[in-house]
Every structure is written in structure tokens, then in C-alpha cells.
Image 1 (cartoon, rainbow, N blue to C red):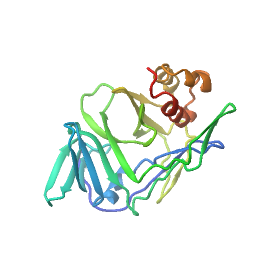
Image 2: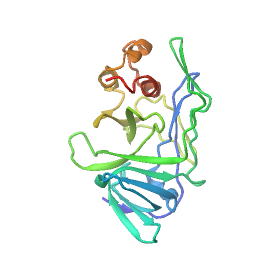
Image 3: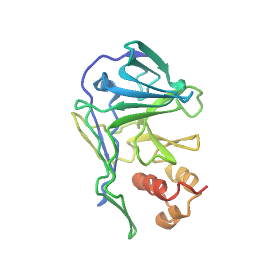
Image 4: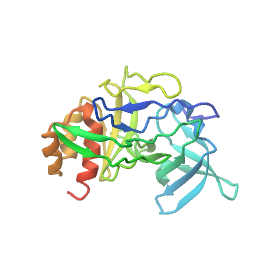
Length: 244
């Protein structure tokens, strides 16, 4: 069932990797309260190559965590609707109501004695959505939230859904600890292929995704544990961009 969204508050959930490194990805939005981003400046990047700027003013979506259509107010004050299959990416500026998500500031990654400095990298202040298939066998395109902005050159981590029994936390800025192995399903997008990824299949999918990069085998030994997914994505982005 589709519904129109009216203004309210947003709940942001923080996503962490346990351990001394403390890496974070962007918090998944609570789509029941996405209206906290309404009236924010936005950029719609179309498949045609055109960039359309305006103000984010509305959506049409199902009860799941994706966007099927967006409505923006153009700079000439007119309203325009775009369908997900027209869009290559959608950027919405964060607000004080929705929170910010500067991440990975002054952090390092440590794996089996190997360390990588993240050079104090801080991601910007946009929520970004990319297109992907609605499900494994479907043909419908939807927009899903990107969770690894700044580390998405080779693999995009899109938030798909909370798995059955997954905890979401409550309240503004509620913590979500990334140790509940049954908590989330991601869409990992590489070279146009979408991999619906959860704890039960990540080891197999990881071997497919990272097989073209010797550095991944060197650092992780060919074993890809679900709780280290963030580390895998960052190391792959840093060292494997030009390996095919």
C-alpha cells in the first residue's frame, strides 16, 4: 500500500562495528519519519545526465525502506515528480531535525596486526539514495539509502530492511549496535550487480565480491565475517579500486 508522508520527526539509528577501531557507516533512516528531511535542498541526478536542483517536498512509497517516487519543488517554484527508474542518484541535505553524520574522523582500521589510517576523513552532510531492484527476482527499481558515502567507489552498501527480530532502538539518536547478526539485510552493488546480503550468506557473497583484490586476501585471509563488513568495504575501496 502506498502512502503520502506528512511532516514530523525522524529517528536516526547509529551503526557501529565493535572493537577498538569503532568504524561507522551512515545511520539508516526511519522511513516512517522521513518527512524530517522535507524542505531540505536536494539534487536529483537523472539517468539522462541532467542534474536537477530544488527542495525535497514529498514522496510516494510502500511500507518498506525505499523510495519509489520523489516530489521536489524546482527553483522556478514549480513542482516535479520523478520515478525511481529515472534517477541515477538522489542527494538530500541533512537538517538539524534529521541530524548529521560526520563519520570516521581520526579513526583507524586494525585487522590481525595490520593497520590503516583513515586520515581523519569526515563524510559530508547529505543523505544519498541509489537505485536497485526491489527484490532478487523483481524488475521494479526503487531508491535505497546509501550507508557508505565516501567509501562507495567500488561497492555501494544500500540499506534494504531489518531482518525478522532485528532491534531498531527507540528515540532520537537511538544507538543501534552492529553486533546483532540477525539485524539487517543490505544490498551490495558492484559493477551493476546487486547482492542481497545478510549474515547467513555473507561469507559466500564476500568471496565473490572481493576475489579480484589480492589485498583483501592478504588482510582478511579469505574469510569474511559479517561483523567485519564495514572493514571489508573500506579496505576494498581504498586498495582495490583499480583491480579487476
